[in-house]
Length: 415
Image 1 (spheres, rainbow, N blue to C red):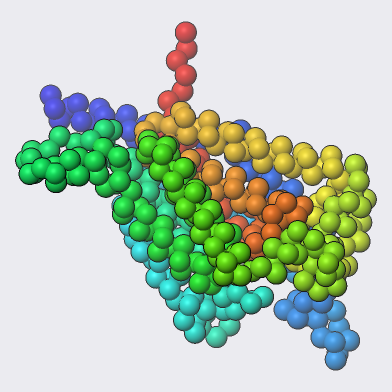
Image 2 (spheres, rainbow, N blue to C red):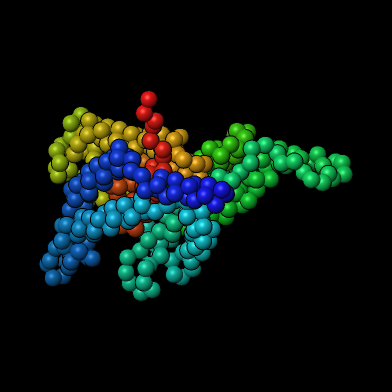
């Protein structure tokens, strides 16, 4: 009877893994991806003309391919969609086994970035090359984000509620201390805290402040969803605030960036140039925008117009209305993600969606806040929009994981 029962459970599990994916979530992803490709085509066309990799040669008098960025991004988009659909058919329960290897690989890659193998761009060493001499680059921080989500979700999904019952008592006062460690969740938090601190330190050494914030946000979201006591989050936020204050105002780290954030017009031709041009682009868009392809700031006035500051071009060409619609689409995607987390089949699937959705939500907020000068510039891309093949590929794989969890959500019972 036990064998038959286990077989019935196995068959039920296999049937759930082959269920339908969540179509609203899939449609929102594809819609944002399609709009992102169209806006990248407009934002990057002029910059590609003067990109050496696209064929620009000043001495020969030849310009580059205006579709260079778009074609490369479209290729990765197609590969990403295929990967997303394949991952969506993969039983996410098997990701438990991959959680430790992915996290270890991410840590090793972050260490390699700090060696001569790392690639430096814009005074930051955040990249590795796929080949030793030449070839495309990628950011190991993208792997680190996924590694933290997988590891935390796999381990915390097995978490017991409440303190354990000890089989053997210790002498006082050690018994009270031991009990406090488990009752307060401190015993559980120590290994997760060590992992987050290790990854945060490695990323700050690049430096990569925005990536560090994303990893910490994803880890904190999963810990919160797993039921860790709220007091630890207040303590952690206070400690982070104190460290940030000391680093910025006492040690003077990036004090110039803070000054430019507060008043970008104090140095509009140098350190404040990018922020000023971004605000010009946003303001000139007005209510309805200048029209698709009619941006003026993309003519080499706004740096990183195809990457971190593509949202400024969106505001300029589509105006307040178009930019708001894109924000609404992102909001709907995030809300749908959390809805799927609430209805997931098990705790592991729920925590996976919480971590991935939080990564997406925080990254979108930080990018738009930087473009609008609500926070200091951190060098963070806009998901599905900014140029970056490997980042887009990993983002779509993460969306595939959410779709995989959605396959195993039991359909509502017909009354």
